[in-house]
Amino acid sequence: MSLTGTWNITISTPIGTQSAVLEFTDHGGVLEGIAKGNTETIPLTELVRDGNRLIWKQSITKPMRLNLTFDVIIDGDTLTGTSKAGMLPSSKVTGTRVVESGQQI
Image (cartoon, one colour):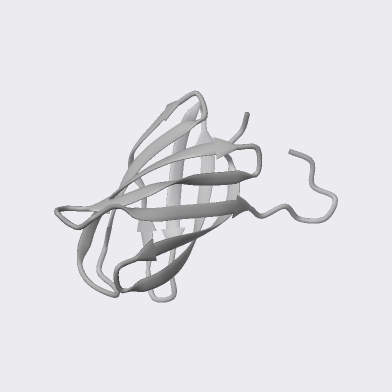
């Protein structure tokens, strides 16, 4: 199952729901990604894929400076899991793959 492509995600945080767009690419068998929010584009680091489970880290500066760790399960064109920021409680993450008309996955 390929993870490459664009994913719309929603994170239910203590300060409200946050949205982002993830873009995953494969460069010679190496998975890479970026997250795009309203005000910044962040590289995803330490991506680890184990079957349909994907873990990565990213650092954001808005709405506040945080180091996040994501742990999600991909099921076809959907993903569910958590995001954790330090000592804060885990936040629920959900997302869907963006499928453009005529595109086959």
